[in-house]
Image 1 (cartoon, rainbow, N blue to C red):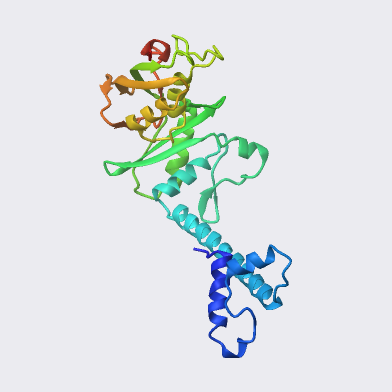
Image 2: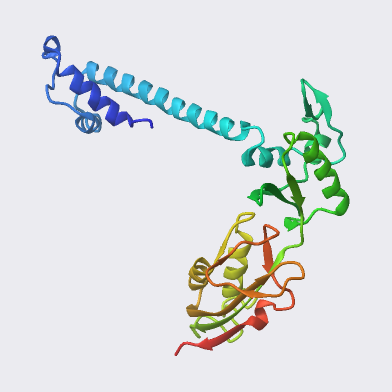
Length: 292
């Protein structure tokens, strides 16, 4: 990890002080702080101190660049592990709908990856790779108007064929793109009547519903295949304007045709993402009680 300019300067001063031939350079006791203090007033500063500062800055620049290089190499190593989960995720984002893979330089790849059409054809916007039961499960989704949406049957079929061509021989892979999991909850919220109306809207802006926005914001900001944590959800609810004490009474989730089940601590959506069940909207799931 790169040292600061001050740390490097002080180290050089320590080394300078071990050389008796340099004892004539004043001040004899120096560090980065005294130099910076001297620079902040009209005092004349020994040119040797400025040279050491410049050397320290140059060394800091080099160390910072090496840190960036190491991070870059580590990222390449992670994505370059052929057949690893990070590799499959990286390759999934490179899928181009409507383009045919070609055998180029001893591997399957697209002949055109830089044209506007090629870039626009990369429809995979969300991807997670999960290892389960001796196989890899690749969850993918696209964005439609900024909303996470499952792939169509034709899109998923094309993506599945792409994965089968690039996967290492013998690797068991399942590609999945599903409708979102459903989430429903009931909340009792004590609110400040000087800030909110009885329906949870701001008195200063009746079109704004802070508690609903907090819940929706937490869900929409979950990473793909991320965990919904009830504690974190309540934390966000507590930050909503005008909410004094929110109580999460019930919380349940489901996927596909599976029945709703209680969430005890956290929930990982089977589809990789989830939404509030339209049959149980927040405007009917939250009971507001004035805190007086």
